[in-house]
Amino acid sequence: MNPSFREILELLNKYEVEYIVVGGVAAVIQGAPITTFDLDALVRISDDNASRLSLALDELDARYREHQSTIKPTKEDILAGGHLLLLTRAGPLDVLGFIGDKDRYEDLVHLSSEVAMTIGRFRVLDLEELIRQKKATDRPKDRAVIELLEEALRHHRQKD
Image 1 (cartoon, one colour):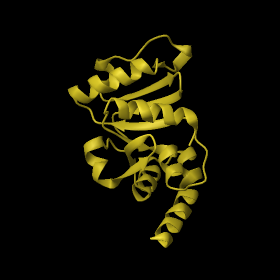
Image 2: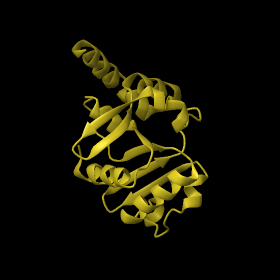
Image 3: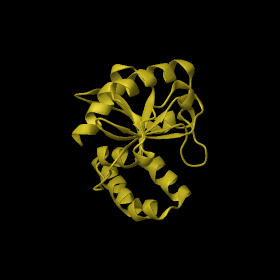
Image 4: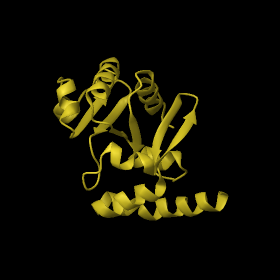
């Protein structure tokens, strides 16, 4: 795992943020041979979680990525439940209020698995659901990795 992603996950865990790793990092953790340049975290949208996430983002010195912004995300930005495309001192982080067809944390937590690493425990979206989400969005960048994800899923099932 990219060292910068480790630091981001460590801080999310330190502040007990409720989140699910989705996107490319979720795929890599589950054995898919893909490259990703940011960490996508689907977060629970609640007042308490937004407060904890705000503390983690402050420690990461998070700013909006667009146009080399100096604007920091606020708790209110998190509570709006959209997408916050951020650059942190540890690398790019996308804080997502929903994915796909407006699927939120609560909709997908039962389709994720807990992973234990040296940085702590966190949830990762299951490969089956990750593939379903990518097929549903039908973006060119998603179509390009579906075959790799399906192969990783076949390999994962053979191990079980």
